[in-house]
Length: 554
Image (cartoon, rainbow, N blue to C red):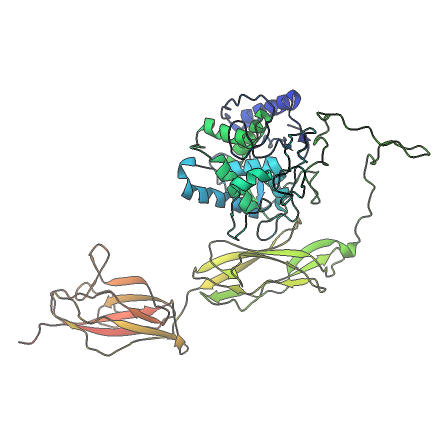
C-alpha cells in the first residue's frame, strides 16, 4: 500500500512508482483494471485553466492524497452497492456527500445522458481531493463547516496563478488557491460553478454545488465516460498527472465494487484533517515530507541563549484532555413518543434528543443534525429535509415540527452529533392515508340508462371526517351483486379503462380539495334491471347507489 492516508505527496518518479506498484497489487486482488489512456504529460501537472482540455486542469496544480484503497474489496462482486450499513471503513461515504454525488449523476443523466457519468467517479475524485469533504464534515445544506483551501498558487512549488476572484472564494487577493471539497480554482469555478442544492447560490464549499460542477466539467465536450479512453481524458483534464489518474482510477474501481452510507462527520479522515484543520499545507510550503521544488528560506536565527533555530517546535505542545464534564459521550432519545400522522398533517410528537457527557450528565452546546431518510416526502417545518440545532443547558434539543407528505408508509429520522463519530439515534415515523368517516351523494337524481347506452348523469359524492371536509381520501368504486355478501357483479353497468375495456371496479380514486369525487362515465350493457354501485373510503365509510337499466317508455 501507499503511505498512510492524509500524506499529500508531490508528483515525481518515486511516488509514481509506488502508486503504480500499489495499483498493480490492487488490480491483482480485485480483478483486471482499465487501461489508462496516455496523457502525454508524464507525471507532471500543468497550469490550471478555465476549461477542461489536455493542457488545463481544475485544481490549479494543487496537491492531492495519493493513498490507495485497501486491497480487500468492500463486498463481493455482484452484491448491492447501496448497503444499509454504518461504520467507518474506507468503503463508507458520508450521507450528504454520497447524496450529492448521486444527485449530480441524476441531474447530468437528464441534461447530458450521452456522457454516462457514474457517481463513483465523483466519489473517487472527492476522496483524492479532500477525503470526502473531511469525512463529511458538512452542515445540513451540504456546506463545509470551514473552507477547504489548497496551497497558495504563487509559483513556489506549485503553479503561478494570480488572483482572479479578489479573494472572494479563497481569501487571497494576490494569488489563487483551490477551493472546496472538489478543489476548484476560482477562475475555473467562475465558468463551471453550479447550484446543486437549489438554494440560489453557487458555492464551491458546498458539496452539492461542487459535485454537480465537477460532473459538468468531466462531461465537457462529447465525452462518453463509459469508454475508458474518455474517462481517462476527463480525469486528466481535472488534474494533469498520470499518478493522479492512477490514484483516482483505483478508488473508482474500489467504489464500483461496493460502498455504503455512514453518518456525516464519521467518514475516514486523513490524520492531517482530523479535528477539522485545513487540509492544505502552510502557504508556500511543500505538501509532503519530500523536499519542495524550491528550497525553503533560511530559518530565523535562534534567540540568544541557544535552542533550536527552527521557529516552530518539531512537535506541537501537548494540551490537557477535556474534562469528563465537557466530553460528549452519548446521544440518546429524550423520551420521543410514537411518530404517526395522517398524510398532509403535522406529527403531534416532536423528536427530542439528549447529549450526555462522560459522567452521564447533560452537555450543552452540542450541535445535532436531524435528517429525514427513506422513501418519503415528509419534511420539517419550512420544507427542509435536514436541520442542525444546538442542545440547551439541559442537554436536550428538539427538532422542528415534522409534517407528513402524501406518501404513506414508514420512513426514518436520524439524529447525529454533527462532526462526531457517535452512533446515530434513529426514529421510525409512519404516515397513514387520509380517512373519511362519512360519504354521500351530492344530489338525489335517479340514475338511469337504456340498454347499451351510457348514463347521462355523473355520479358525484362528498367525503367528510368528523364533520370536516376530507380531501385526498382514497375511494374504491365497485359494481356489486345483491345479497348478504355482495361481490363484484359480472353484468350490468360498467366503467371503461384507458384502453376501452370493461371494468367494474375502480381503485386509486381520491377526493379533491373540497372532499368531492366525480366518477368517470358509467355505461349500461344489454341486460335490463336494477343494479348497485358501492363506494368505500379509506377509513371504512360506505355509500351504495342504485343504477337502473331500462328501455325508455314508448
